[in-house]
Each structure stands twice: as C-alpha cells, then as structure tokens.
Image (cartoon, rainbow, N blue to C red; front, side, top):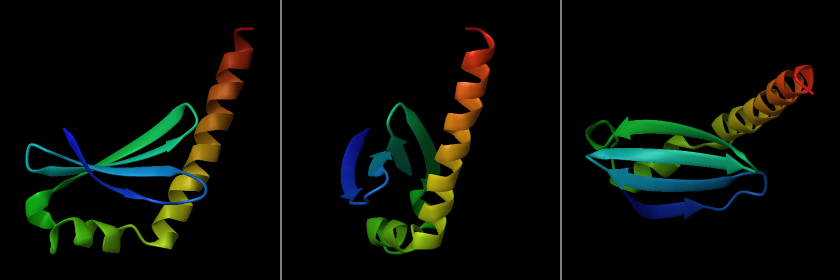
Length: 81
C-alpha cells in the first residue's frame, strides 16, 4: 500500500492510498478511523476523480459519523468502568 495523496482538512486527516487496483480513502480523527475503498476502474480521472468524489457534503457526513462513533465508544466503555 502506498500513499498517493493527502487532502488537507481541519477536522480530519484524509489520506488516499493505492493498493491492488483500489483507491483506499482513510479518514482519521484521534484514535478513530473510517476507510472507504473504490476500484481504480470505477473512478474517472484517477486520483483527481477521487478528489471530486470527496466533496464537502460527504466530508461533513464523515465528520458527523466520527462524533457518533466517539459517543458510542464512550458509552460502551463507561458501562464497564
């Protein structure tokens, strides 16, 4: 797996990898991460096409999902402490 791009964003680290004819898009926020995979064959214009897919509306949903993930984990963790 190799890093082919990073997309700067204030709320999440966004890294795009290439591996086995797939683009792997990884969002990181603290200890949490979300990963999405796309076949390179399904994306027009290569990595530039991935940038087009990652519009602000989608990124906002990813960031909101991080908040849900964090809350779910904290709630579960607190049940056992």
